[in-house]
Length: 242
Image 1 (tube, rainbow, N blue to C red):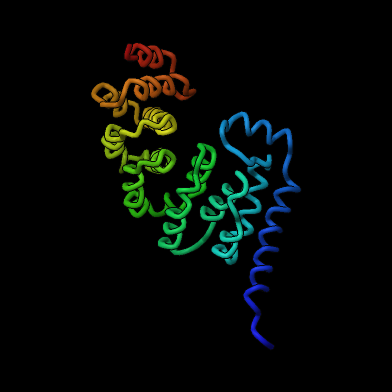
Image 2: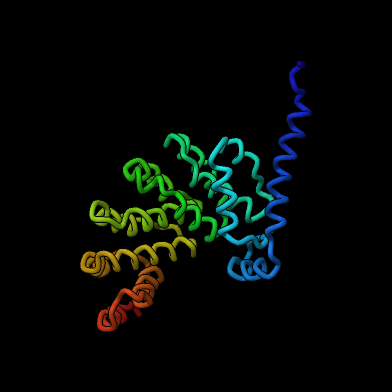
């Protein structure tokens, strides 16, 4: 049998890509698209596919030939980009391969939803904390807003632990990126530190070098937590910078 021509292979790849797009198109809900768009201003090409359905597709694509399936996804829609992140998160592969694909995916993140959903799917970080910690350090220093946010959200998802809590505060103080989504991620991370390590975090807040916006947002998020009692919230509110 003669070898397949390049043209035939390209056609097969095109059909595979079309298959993913068709699945997403069938699952799209106009009302959910409008709702998602309202939460993600500036994000284009939202189809309106719910996350449980996306995750179901991603789990299937991650089981076999995950790198090939990853390559089948384009960047034509919010959902296809999200699908790529989920495939990477669900893939069972050697850690260097996972980290390589994470690095390749980071420039594609352009909104908080893809960023945060990607982070919480990367369960390999909980299994390999030291390796991921090293991987995240250059991300923290990146000039790209969502690469920095990715690093911060990874820290709050996997590193607010007895082994790492004291290493987080200097990182928060050292972040200088002016992006709104970076500042909000730091505030979120500080509030989660407070929930899990209130004494250490309150001590940090008394000496931290956070800018006023991030500092006050941190206090706000702490007071919004259902895990913090009323008296503590009153004390935290009194710490606000004017």
